[in-house]
Amino acid sequence: MWTSTLNSGGPTEECPFPTMPQPTDWLLRHSVVMCLLLHSLVLMTFCFHHAATTCSNRCYCSESETGGKTVRCSNLQLTEIPLDIPNDTQRIYLDFNLLTSVPTNAFGGLSHLVELDISHNELTQLEPGAFRGLGPSLQFLDLSSNKLVNFNPEAFDGLRAYANLTNNPWHCDCNLQMAMPRVDLEPVSLTGIVCQTSDPEEIGVEGHSFLLKPDIDLCVVMKKTTDVAMLVVMFGWFTMVISYLVYYVRANQEDARRHLEYLKSLPSRQGRSEESSTISTVV
Image (cartoon, helix red, strand yellow):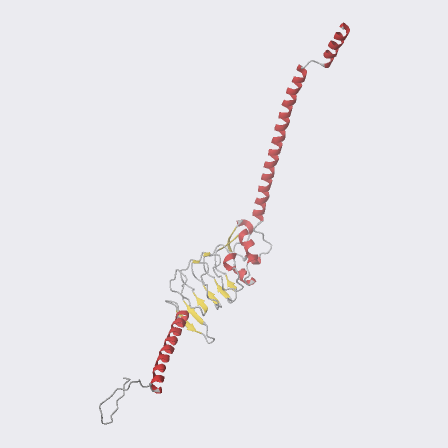
């Protein structure tokens, strides 16, 4: 309480003014408040850090000596790429699962990723921008032993990594030949594209790495088709022009015939002049 008692042999009186708190009490109260605030701040920091670096569900995580995280999700029967991969992950192993596609921005936010293994899955499609954002950091990409048939250069946009593309049923055609110069992958990566099928079939690349067959032109059929189409179009235009000329000549001939008949139906000049001479003589 803020009252004090005077014992001088008389009655007890209350002090009209409150006494000042002791310095120790003031320091104690403020120390408790500061301690609680500091504790709350540490707890919030820990929660945010845990949310950003916790391991993905069902996967096994480990820390390397340099502090980078490795996430192993191998052989878990996964059908979709996990969305809760920690942002500080450097290596991801998704091999031996049931993944069928890699959607756009599937690894967005993983700016420290160095190695990505998606081998031995059921991949048939790599959507445009599938590995977007990994260009500056990614060094190795394993897509071997999947079911990739068509090569989509937009999926590898910005990547300069080495990619393992072996053991896929690649279909080699003009589209693949036109797509190869548009990617920035390590050149040796493209040697892993071995043609299981080709268009045209008789071109002679089945069972061989297309990159190691530099003299083969898969666009020759398309070029021939284009040439034939151009010839057909030119022949069509030529036929139209000839038809128009024939029609024009025939129409003019008919008009000329009608005009000639009209002229023949008129009195001749000679008849007119004889008639004029007769009238003059009579006069």
